[in-house]
Length: 176
Image (cartoon, rainbow, N blue to C red):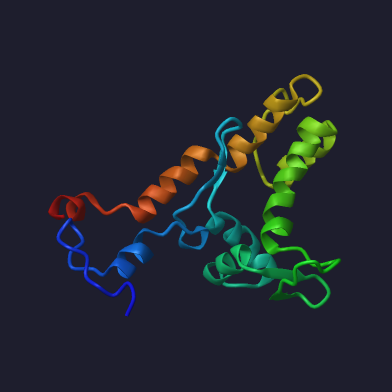
């Protein structure tokens, strides 16, 4: 079969090319991808939003992670996750509706439409402790967005969590 030949020594441990490819594939569902904005200091893995939405959607966070990245949509009317149909007038992918819209809303309130009161309300809804002096989009719109995101979705935490989840322990790493 194609891709079934064992890869030569080179540290493969006798794994086939297909096994190595699967092991090293980047996929948000696997948790080895961080969506981020380095300039604004935020980042997240799908698992972060899966945990946030799991209780609200009454779903298993691990399964929800697959739905967030896959071709699925959440039907508000019946409360169910359904297949996304591209081009459908009312359906939107879950990644867009449950993640990107939240991020856009913060940028909208801080940078684009400058709504300081809305930004403060969103911070309170998320239980974020952001000093009022930092949430002043009328003074520094980009700074307000950064202050919000760095407390809500800190980039360093997302990258560190990914490393912890996917890097071998020091003991295992030394043996290989």
